[in-house]
Length: 349
Image 1 (cartoon, rainbow, N blue to C red):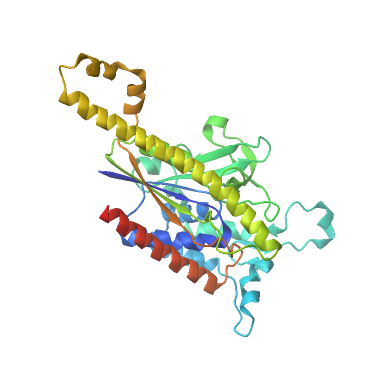
Image 2: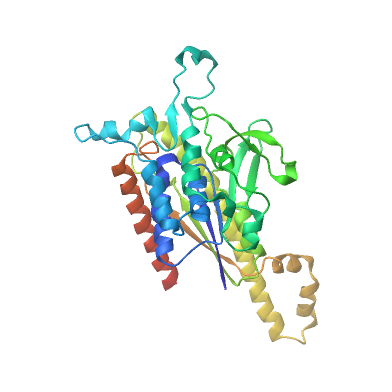
């Protein structure tokens, strides 16, 4: 049996790359068992797990149609790529209370996102009871508690996921306002204000890794869709490029550290499996048999089978605000193609 995890990063319009990656996985018969996401990754993950029409692929495609900005035929491409500055129809609108500018804590209103989420997601699937009935994959979203500064996880195995939780995960300041949502049960469940989970960790890996390690399934696979490549294509040419590169370095470094930790655990599991074979082959070797009582050996055996980690990396981090039809389609195609290549490599290995 195989258990599959999927981790989706935040990155605005770069989330169209995730759309392509998910489409390719679904076309290949891969429906993840555990999905975690943050920011735009939380939106994609929630639609994937809680889609309304019985077809997650179509639901995601319809979502991104609603997130597409208007492109005018006689307008320069550079202008069309930046139309999101004036709002994104399915996600946010520009604030109109200019007279209150001195009291603003955000630039946009995310009310449209609530309607979009309710349109595409059946939130009755994102509950502990639905999980017990096997109606949807396990969904894990992350957000940053504004007051405690801690990262909190909304897990459909433990609580009902609401539109507010998805919005909270993508409430990136100062563009978007903090979102009030019920806290996880173990913290009391009271409502708190949240900002984007990417402020703390843009690659919510840990709980997915835990879920895979705890599973008795012998074949464990973890797909990580990275929107921020560590290598640059060219040097920054303006302030926007500099800011984009700074964000890319911060996100890619944190992800690399987390993936390295997961791979180390996998290597230790492989060592335990090799020791098992050696111990079984020499039943009369007292010293080898004593290893079974070693605390370190017992810890390793708790992990079960190793996790196969598949990283799908977006080649360019530029265009995070480009919600134009052309920009979305370009990233969607890239995500699909690169995922197909990774799946072929996985099958050939």
